Structures are given as structure tokens and as C-alpha cells.
Image (cartoon, rainbow, N blue to C red; front, side, top):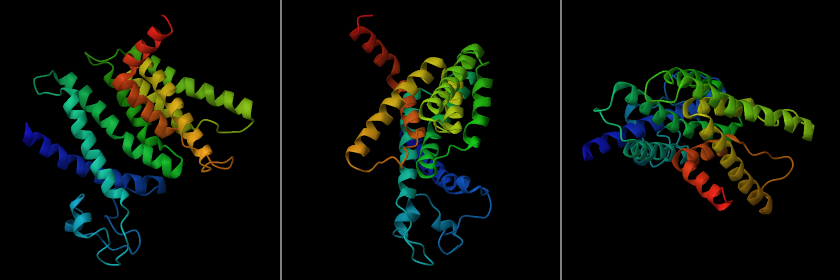
Length: 265
């Protein structure tokens, strides 16, 4: 089993390296396949030994071998985070070759979906967008696998789409009416929660929105109190929706039961 985790660690680093490509290129509408990896400062073509996840960063001491420009620490951090996340998800997923193939497909897709939280969150934090290629295709896949045995039913998946995407869309319309501002709720957020609702169902989607709103409110209050946020600034909602959904997946039912018990239900 130890060997499996070693393989997962290196696989996670490789996936994280690919996430770095997505994070840089997708918001700029660039191909993720071409041109080959290059320094964003001097366009130096990165050789294969300069492109080994994490290890090349350490070997190069965080600098381009050609122009000596510093390489952002964000790159290895994303690789490490992805690797650690993959190992954790595999450990708690109970994934095994003894499972039926539908169970393996469903579990693997959920693992991939949670891993994608990383590039989605970073892109939204940096560019205030959630690209459609992270949501629309995966929404279709999520709904399609609801037809597999052992998963939520197609009706539950559809209700998840309505609950996740529909509730955010309604909140956006209400926000436009109340605050007299357009785009009070980004379309990317709506599609994101529709996708997550399709995969995990209405309960997880709704709890994800509630937890995400709470986390976003806490962050907003903190930024206001520390004078790091004013009326001209905005906070992307996507990372909080993702964090809230993760909380809902891990402990949503326990938190809901604890709350109901507290209020006397």
C-alpha cells in the first residue's frame, strides 16, 4: 500500500503541474497543448528536466535558467496541494479494484471533481471568472453517471441542478433588483453549483451555498475590519462556494443534524 501512495504523490504533482498550465492559459484563451511550456518573462522553452514538478523548481532555486526571473512560489504550492489532496481523497474514498465498475467510475469522477476545485478557485481569485470548460462538460458527465447503479438517481441529479444553479440564479436576480446592479451573481457561479448539484444532489448543493455564504461573509467582514476591502473591491464567490461544498460533502449531514438538535427539531 505504501508504494501506491508514493505513486499517487508523484501523480498528484504531475496533475498539479497541469493545473498550473490551466490556471495560466485558460483565462487568456490560450491552448493548453501548444506552444510547449515556456518562461512567461523571456519565452525560454522549458526543457524536460526543467519541467519536473516540484523538483525542477527546487533544482533551479525558483528562477528561470535563461533570464534568471523568479518563478512564483504559487506553482510548487499548487503541485504540493494537489498531491496532498489526491492522497487524502484516495485514502478516504475506499476505492478498490474489488468494487463494481460503476462504483469505480463514480468514485473516480468525484475525486477528479474535487481536485478541480483547486484550479477553479485560483482562477476565480485571480481573474474573477469560472470558465465554462470547468463546468458545462462536467455537468453533462455528472448527470450522465446518475444513470449508473449505486449513484444518486437522474431525478435527484436534476433536482440538484435546479437547487444548486437555480437558487443562485434566483439570488442573482434578487440582488440585481435590490442593489440596482448587474451581475450581482456571476454566471460562472451558477453553472458551478448546477454541476456540483448534478453530481452530489440537492442537499449537498444547498448546504454548500449556505456554508459558502457564511465563509464569504466571515472573510468579507475580516477584510473590511482590516481596511483591505472597500466599495470598489469585490470578493469572488467561487472559492467560498467550493469550500462550502467541501464542508457539506465531508460533514454536512452531521452539522445539519447538530443544528436541528440545537433548535429542538
